[in-house]
Image 1 (cartoon, each protein chain N blue to C red):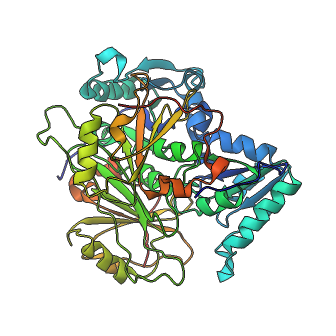
Image 2 (image 1 turned 90 degrees about the horizontal axis):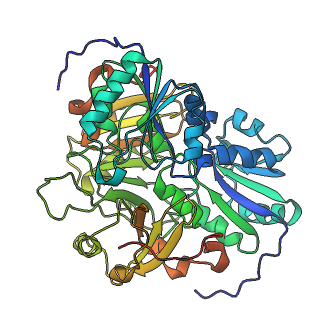
Image 3 (image 1 turned 135 degrees about the vertical axis):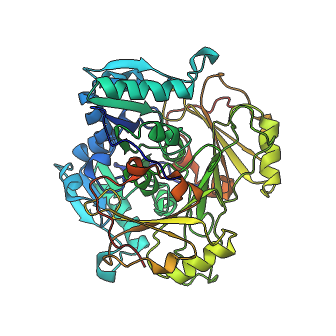
Length: 260
Length: 260
């Protein structure tokens, strides 16, 4: 695609900023500084209130996609970003986790070709879950590769069961719902039925929980509250063999029910 | 493995902390706070001096593995962590990037079973590269999954060519050296020869560079300075079709030579 684009003509710079996995202190120093100087912040729904408080002088606009099913259309967000860049100097588009993973950043970058634009990385949920529950995602001799994927599809997508990558460790984002379909997709991707699975909910937030299963017993996982983000980890590194007692126990978070 | 471990008997708590990809302001607020209160910090070789300055009251111990080939043995680091936990209250083990990825965290967690231990996630290099060069790793309809892997093996490992995962986007860590072997491993993993490749060096540090190639032309990439960390990105999302002019150009970093 050769595009003849107009050179940056809007006064504002838009920063696509990762807010990290939930806990306000897992924000980066750079993101905190940008929030403090922002004129306007367009933010996802699940951003912690204390994180938003850092945007002391900014107008806050919730463009979250989970607001009671009344999801904000991506085209609306794209237009809102352009409008903000036309009116404000420092525009922050604050996204949960990291903006380069499952965050529609490509669409927003494309929409913002006429504005100055920068990206600021964040801690993604899989890394936060690994830290919170002391489960390294790689392990010499056991797990040399990690894949991040989601089974979520755009509405109207054709394939019923999207292909999963195959890696030693697999982290499935937005894993709530259709646990039977997830089980089938994992088996179809070549994972053995006895592969260990962990199910983390509310990572880096109060009430974070971890449940353990295997692909075979995945459907027995209990359901937790219906808005908690759920992340599934799949792979030998999550197995009993590698839980060294208390060193692996989640800290200060009771094991509670998890995802369906 | 059922282990009968002694309950935490050492006075100190060891924090395995991710320092992020290099820029001091890509540290998390939590990591900055821990550094400020640490009694001792055992750190990797490539940690930015300004990051270490945050550890105002700590004894600093460089346990980096790259110091002129005289790599610090992992068992030495494990023992040093235990010794530190016996003597100090707040011990920070500061690792580049994120501690759960390619960071030997599993070994250190195992060694620290008798000490209190926490992990603090960090921004990993792949996410920082995506942000710096405005290259989202996922893209609706193009890239639904990302894998992180390395071709580096422990010394004396048997297999000559370790298996690579297969995902829409692949990020290869520690990709310096043996570019021919990398090319072969990618082709053997099923990637098409015309798959776009980006080669990022010195991500999130001064003089960060990006080079573009395909798997077929990978061997033509120019070499850069021999200690710069190198990260390869492989996949359609890095292709010309998705570079929308200036919106994708790296900011303030000239395109320079890269890895071999």
